[in-house]
Length: 67
Image 1 (cartoon, rainbow, N blue to C red):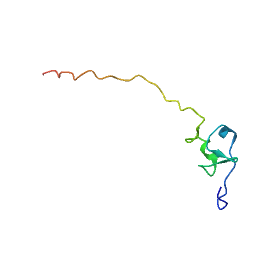
Image 2 (image 1 turned 60 degrees about the vertical axis):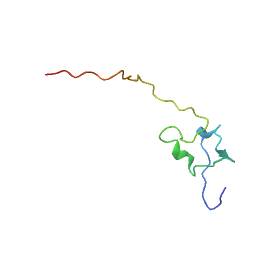
Image 3 (image 1 turned 180 degrees about the vertical axis):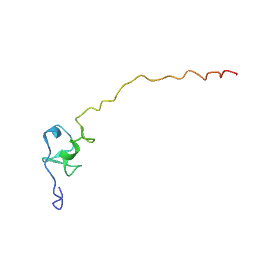
Image 4 (image 1 turned 45 degrees about the vertical axis):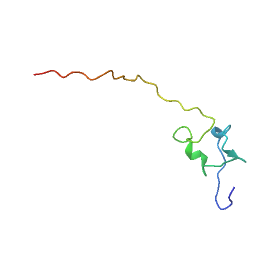
């Protein structure tokens, strides 16, 4: 790690991530800041869940009514 930068140690949520090298994250200087609003965007050990909703399927165009 570069000694000119004050690298913060990883937090408990980082355990199991492939980006952790010698108790420091190799991507983020302050890993705790990435976990404040939810999951870290670079976490390799977390599975990203997407909201599955119904998908509208368009079959074809509808004819317009004549007035």
